[in-house]
Image 1 (cartoon, helix red, strand yellow):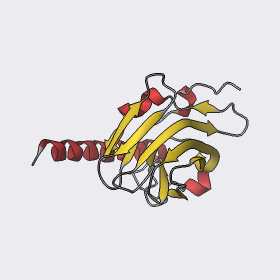
Image 2 (cartoon, helix red, strand yellow; image 1 turned 180 degrees about the horizontal axis):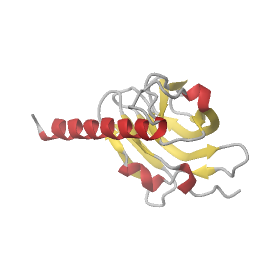
Image 3 (tube, helix red, strand yellow; image 1 turned 30 degrees about the vertical axis):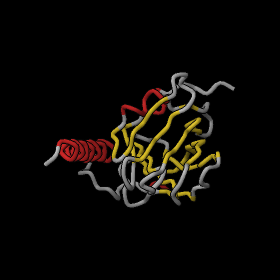
Image 4 (cartoon, rainbow, N blue to C red; image 1 turned 135 degrees about the vertical axis):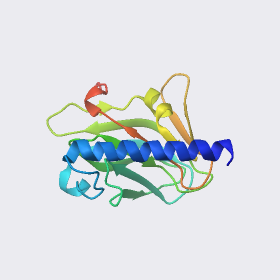
Length: 171
């Protein structure tokens, strides 16, 4: 097995174990992927301002609910704010910004809005640390924008998250 494939397999295995542990800690049960409905628990908004070069959909998965992704139609080459529902207790997040093998996503902001709370912003410096599948993540030197570039079809990035640690967005 080549080293890139071995690395991808290890990352995927780690992600599965991590998500199973999150499911156990959230539900007090074994990691049942259907135990928490994103729609039923939705209480906030994830807003991603992005320009996606190609593809048809931007998909987001929240927590351990792999069977219920949210997908929005991509406006190729245009800056657009993509808005997704997120649960109050958000513990993991996966971005699939494009299914295209040559897709690129430039992102100017990632914001979480919950009723009665100040908006928070996911720091771009966190994204290169996320688990990547067929994706490269680079942050511009000024830290004002991030680029996610596909290295193969169906790219994604994912990680555990804790919105309460993210900085409040100044108005």
